[in-house]
Length: 269
Image 1 (tube, helix red, strand yellow):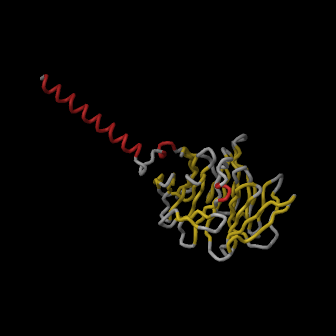
Image 2 (cartoon, rainbow, N blue to C red):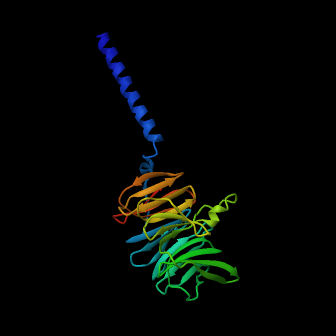
């Protein structure tokens, strides 16, 4: 009887030890992510196709090209604009949109037009109120600098290559000027590149992606062509979740995503 008890205790210790070792392995193995356990559902409009946030201020663009703002003070969705093609929130909270007239607007006390018909703007990415990037109808990379009161200077940074998405870093670090100078893109092959002001391209992915969001030069998230959400940190790719339609990342390192069923969730990255 004593031998049986000893064998059972020994076996129990062996199983517990195996579980502990397995947990430690999964925790430190970069190919596994525990953030799925921290997912929470949030309110959203019908048919969302894009989401972005500045802290807990959350903005949505729907399939009907309507822009909504989830305002946490009132805990309600507020309709903001129609006929919106794209929108972006910068590191300083600046919100810019492109509309069906292919012009760019920023949010002040109203939607203020800041482009002047030189380009047909489609997609937009905001670094700050002083620096905005767009992709035009020819898939060229366009840049706008705020150079005088109420005036932006627009120029085509690259009119030779084709661009399909741009993303400015949302982390502004005073000791890292490189964040200001870098821009992340999805190129004509749908691979991810880091683009610098001297028009050099650093390949980040070896497979096609359809959407990215950049925190800083060491941390981005992206959705591949199979709707898998990935996290790229310090050179390591980690699969976060499958069946994701769109995802974003804010300065609190919170990930918001829309799944294939048009449900919206938040998780801590």
